[in-house]
Image 1: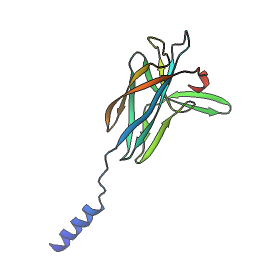
Image 2: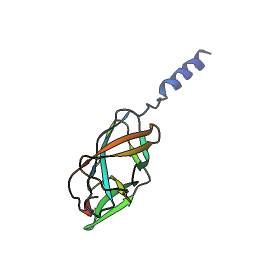
Image 3: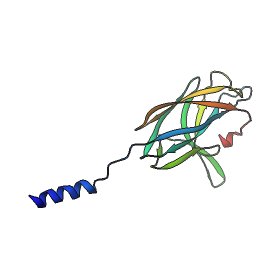
Image 4: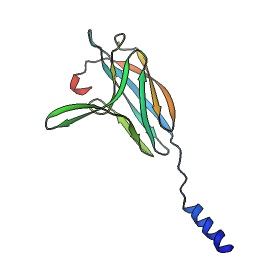
Length: 145
């Protein structure tokens, strides 16, 4: 009986309990549009001081939103949709111009500097997070969206 109890304790001690994610979103922003422009992009930094999580969906008020990555291969810039974005445990994941970003398309109204656009981020474990992205001035070449 003592051996069985000792084995049970060892098994319990060796089981690592998965730590929940601890997600925060910092510095959300989107590029202002120029006349006639129906799309833009939004960026932010995700800090996770807990266990792993995954960004699985995005939406925006007043626009279609999707997660994209930009890469350079053989001198050609490529933009591809992402189904999700892994947020490893104890990590920082940056969405930046020329990299991973939220593509905003079919804007229902122009984005002007000083405005905000509401983003809804859905994480696999942390659930939904509303984020207000400040609209910043500046034209952005298509190659950096």
